Length: 408
Image (cartoon, rainbow, N blue to C red):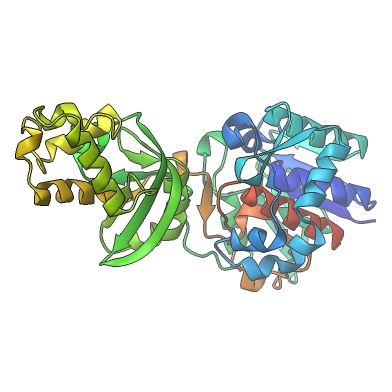
C-alpha cells in the first residue's frame, strides 16, 4: 500500500481517489475550495453532461488535441463504464440529443454527492481549504507536497488534478501548469476554448438575445474555410455564442493571432439558392403591390429581418413589382451567406475549457505518470487534451483519472 496525494477535488481528482482507494492505497485529496466539485457543479448549465453515449470512433473524433494519446485511457475505461459506474452509485441517468448523458434529476449535485459518498466509504481523507503551494521531489522522484500553510505532507505518489484556467470563479488558478513547469515539464500555449466570440459589426449586437436554430455557420481566414457546421447559435451584446460558436472557437481560435476572421451564416440551409428564390417569388406573387418590407416578414425572425433590410440590398419601401431579378437574387444570396466579422475569443470567465496544457510527450499514456519525475501524475484538463462540448471533456477526466489510479 502506498500513500497517494491528489491535488484538486474536481472531477478527475475525486474519480482517481475512488479507484486508488479501492486498490488499497491510503488516499488524501487536497482541495483549496470549501467543498468538492465546484466546477462540476456548473457544468452543463448545472445539469452536468458527464459523458457521451457515442461509439468509440466518435469518442476519439470528438477530441481535438492529442486524441491518439488517449487510446489506452479510453479503451481502459470508456464512456459506458462511466455510465455504469454512476448508475451503480444510485445516480439514474438519461441520454439526450447528441448522445449527451445527464443525471435523470438534472442536478449536477447528484454526481458530486455520489462521488463524495463513495470517497468517504473508502476512507479517502478529504482536506478542504487546503491549498498546495509546491510539489516536493528528490532525485527525480516525488516525496510529497508543501501546503500554503507551511505543512509538509509526505507521499509516494502525487496526482495533479487541478483543472485549467476556465471559470476562475470556481477557484481555477492554473496552479497545475505552475507545478508542471516547476518540476521540469513543458506546458504548451494556453488559451480559452469552447468560448463565445466577439464580432466587429454593430448590427450583430443589435440582435442580442436572438437564437437561431438549424443554420449553418462557416468561418474563413484569408479565403480558406476553417470551419463549417450545422446547428444552433445566438447573438449577444458582444458577438455570438451557442453550440456552433463554442465548437468553432476550438477549431479557429489560433487563427486570431494573424487577423480577424470572416464568418457567414446560411439562414436557410435546407433550401438551395434556386429553392429559396422560388420561395421569395411565391411571397412576391401574394403581394405584388405591397412594399418589400411588408411581404418578406414570414421568411426570417423580425430582429434579423430588421438588420438585413437595413443593409439596403433592396430598399424596404420598394414595391414588390418594381424589384428586379438581380435585386431578388442578391437578397437570396445574402440570406444564404449572412456576413459578419469575428475579432477574437472571450476570456476564461466564459470558457468551458482551457486549450493547451502539460505536453503529453512527457507523460505515459498508460497511467498518466510523468516520464521525468517518478510518482508524479497529471490528470484531466491540466494535460494538453481538449474536446468538443457534449460530455467529452469530462470523459477525458474520468478516463485519465482511472488510468492513473489503476496504474499505481
